[in-house]
Length: 326
Ligand code: ADE
Ligand code: ZN
Image 1: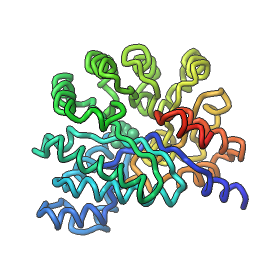
Image 2: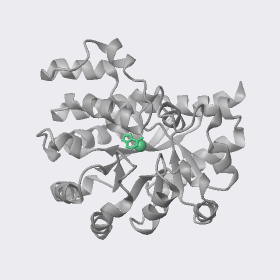
Image 3: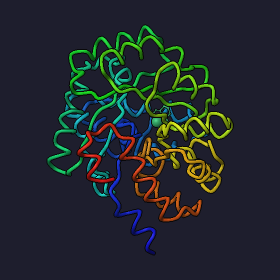
């Protein structure tokens, strides 16, 4: 009784949320109607029934199709505002939001439209929900280095509204090295750097994210468990791991939530955090991730405080903001 209440009520920082992954089926259909976009599903229920994933790629195919309804600045605003409303209900007070501009620019949506809408929602999130929100631009790793450089060029007029860059999409076959030069330029521009690594991919991708991209946080990183030397390094350097338990379960990274290695990662001294990844697709926002993970794995209240502290320490918020919650 007391542990669930602690999990629900403690202040949280969310460091791994793809805003396109917060698009609920109801909003997908509303935006499709508003914009005259045809969907390959007749209604909300049949779309939701398609959310039966076997691996990362089987999810990404549906996730990119869902994002096709986003065309106008107001669409991006409405999507982000809906996320902030749910996040606030889960006591999220700080959110660092991933977005995938290439998904939209490839459909002819201008970078300015994407960033204007998301940024306006971030400004209003502080006013309306008391959430400190910021944006992290993610490069799609299944696309080319050249495409990533073009995306960075298109984003340059708006870098004051972005705190960092990330790397997402299909991991296997697209190692971090592919984006070494893009990330070097991002760091020269003063941007923070994170990368998905070790979600499905091997520990070598985590090493490369750290050594080649100079990632400050690792998104997912759960495959580190197979590399003892890497585990030691992650613990020693307190590299935050933005773990997403319900995502890992739904994408069959672990057969069941009870099999998740979050307890082992914490016990090894890693700076683990809990996050929702793509909450509209994986069956839950922050509190669902905390409550279901604790129930399935038997984590205790010490772990709850540790996870919350790790997230604020690992965030890119200014020192004063972090200090309020640590
Ligand atoms: N894009 C959205 N969610 C993702 C995930 N879990 N892994 C890689 N790319 C993603
Ligand atoms: Zn992710």
